[in-house]
Image (cartoon, rainbow, N blue to C red):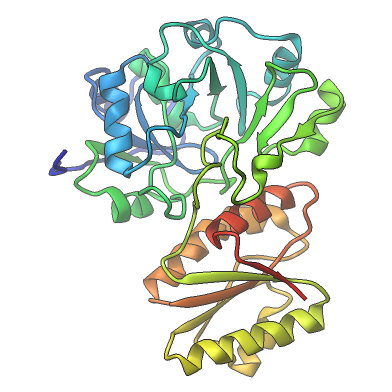
Length: 359
């Protein structure tokens, strides 16, 4: 399918919830009702939305992104009364999680209704549903009057977009419109948890952590398919293919700090000998070392090791900055896997295509 749209851009203030009918929201919602694809901000990343009840509309998401159709999508709702349209049943633990964390960065896997477009679920009998915690997203979905299927608004495999500019860099001319609500907050996508089984299982780590959920519903399992290269079919969006990747080759190095630095320096030196432009994904704690040693052509700071919320928020923008600076070879350190660190490491390992060295 040829992509030759004139992508329309709407700029909307985040206080839209205080406006009865923002003209830009009304216009964007009309596009969605008419079967077009529209990007919009959530509290995690920008989503690429289409009517979740229409296969024809949802197909346009896959075409725009270049996304494999065996990769399921998340359905976003703007009000509680939309839940019964997409979910045939809500288990008790699912209700407790929704009451605790909705609106918010939590996607709950539920049995689907027949109204959900088959392309949304990639042939599964379940559907991932969430209510985003963003005034523009909620206003847009309510105004559209239908649940919205929305993966991240980027070309498939690229770092997820946290600004409208990121969306346009990937999808200008491929989607009908973009609602510009400024930079997003959480930075990494929602946590996905399957409550159709007991105990529930986290299928994708994200903005709500296991440590936050277990006091609400008890023990939560972790899906082994988190790991890059897992053979089983994905039950969650973004878990089958290499995702979030910069254009340059990326490696992660874990271990004792001095050994990590020595290994990274050696890797950078070898890359330079092959004529590659090199980069380091650093933290505030390690950046002074890399900047003073001039071991890499580009040193970008993703945040502090003591503030994983900052790291999650800035991760995708930093990965895109490596592309903007045409970096061909990137090395980065790892983070502890507790709390939000699990989501950060999941995205980094995906971005690196599983290239992780232990020293």
